[in-house]
Length: 276
Image 1 (tube, rainbow, N blue to C red):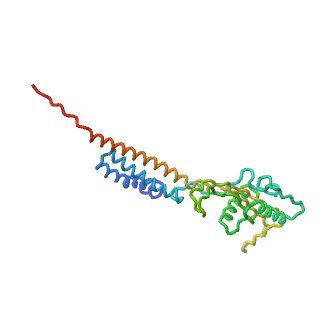
Image 2 (image 1 turned 180 degrees about the vertical axis):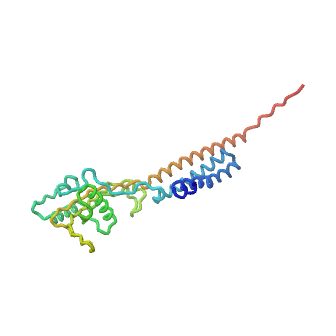
Image 3 (image 1 turned 60 degrees about the vertical axis):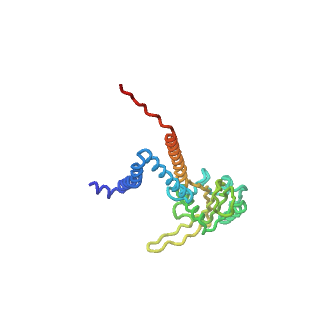
């Protein structure tokens, strides 16, 4: 029954593997050191070596973003300003400084073009469809629109993505790789979506090509970039293991000084007893 439990419960098998690995690898090293240095000194030496190895491993994880990872960067909705359904809402949300005022008789497609021109004029950068940020922001906006109930799946299409901000500082070197650029300006994305004409589905035939409805106004999804904490666990591991390693090295150094002082001290002569 125990064998069946291990085979059918992967978590039990994983726990047993970890216990055996720790006992064999770390325990064998401690056993060898304890037999040569003593139980307490062997423990200090082996534990210091383990902390030093964890520090080196954590440094590699922290540098390259590997190993134990935190939450990845993602696009998050701007609170109370996520789904904007008109040019006036863009101005009220702070997306546009100058409001785009259009007559009610103007075609929705022309209004959308005027809004796009206003965004470009106010330093919003329009992304190409092949850009990675275009796909990521479009996917996040799709989820937010469906969760808010503004559209159902398949009722809209992402037609444009704009971004602004996200600059890093201080920039001491030319290029993308700069480990000293710790500060970031807020990075915003504005996703423009257009409603689609409802297509009739016929059994046995491929779905019809999506067609944008020119009579419906475009809507916008306003988001901000959450940088996440991808390297945070590795940073805690690195700093914590370094502190433990330095404390253990200090204890070993203190012990060595005490041993040297005891060796250098003069021996106390043994008192001889005289029997009568």
